[in-house]
Length: 64
Image 1 (tube, rainbow, N blue to C red):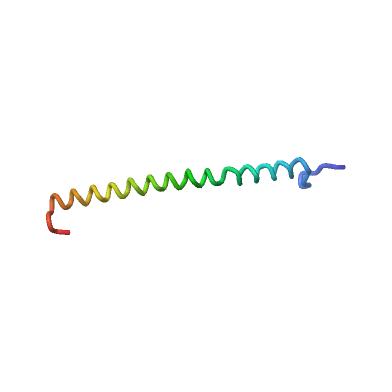
Image 2: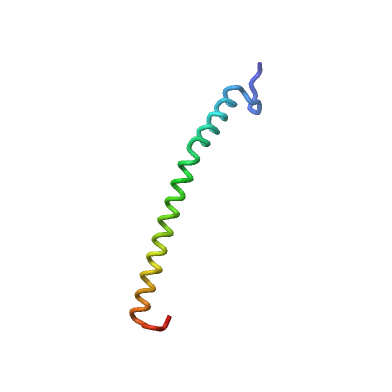
């Protein structure tokens, strides 16, 4: 059996399957981590907007 660079060997096939299985295994954790990061960014944005609204209302009462 001659090994060329473009032939799929059983070893490379097994490695590819293992890589896909590991990615599928860790995909929920990756998505949860991304969702938590986005949630914290959203919380910070809401806090900043509320704080800015309080400052604007304090310096310009009744304008908004």
